[in-house]
Length: 398
Ligand SMILES: Cc1ncc(COP(=O)(O)O)c(C=O)c1O
Image (tube, rainbow, N blue to C red):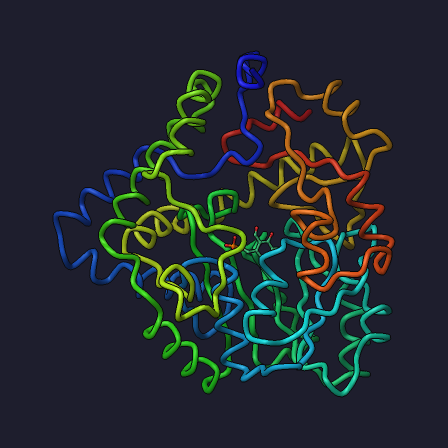
């Protein structure tokens, strides 16, 4: 019934991915020429490293698997503590728990929805092995606060750039290992349907990541076929003029065994269980990803123009925080009223409506104590966000 109601014309989905039907020419070409297939992952990794300015990049089946690999490469062990922010995706603390370590939640700041360094300082102890710095919606953490924090604390930093392609490259900061992970799932700036990348500058960590990548499970032919169907149907379903028409069909397709996705509960550490463990990125994802990396400057420029247009209206961000590139996110008193009154051509959906996506029933399992991060809880109750994508013209948000 919900779908019938939703048949009101919607032009834009809540994430509007950047890939398009022409990507299939590249897939067909790669199917014909083995050399393209064989070189695709290396080419993707090289191009990715040069865009994000790190020496090494290694692809994995998802962002959480890339984080898991980084934690393994750092030799994080049982009972070690990793500080992360609340207002995050549940797969982040899950990856930490999968290596046997404990996620410790710090609160966030309202201005950019990123970790509050003052809170982190209170949580650091002898068991703390790393702090994950998330770039929520593609917003930078406050660099001067980070510089001061690192002057006072000698601690490993891992950047969570699941929402962007711009890790910290500030010359004032010497984040020596340069550890960062990305997600290339279908809601992100680069869409390979599912996927992730772990990058670094440190040669020893790079060697370990290479070996974890080579030991990871292959996707297998059946999953590559499911991936290609999933990408194809999603490209059609996310085409502006076809979106409403395709929704019922897409709804059914997503329930079918042909649709590929990782379950949020996927255990990266579960090597015994056939379904668990970490997976490789396939040539198909690399081919599709490369198409988008080739036009990444245009993608980011357009998204920033949309963000700027929205910021003129809502003035949520000042110059220091920069502007988001994944979704334009800000706080309102009444979320439902905002969505009913604004941008009815968008299929609205909010990231994140809980301090940890998935909500209360996951708190115990993921070691979050309700009430411990009040700003993250407040922000998640008042958050709205709007999609940014090259498929949306700037005049739509003016
Ligand atoms: C902040 C954050 N970190 C990590 C991830 C993990 O990405 P993936 O779904 O590719 O595992 C996500 C997923 O959206 C995320 O939002």
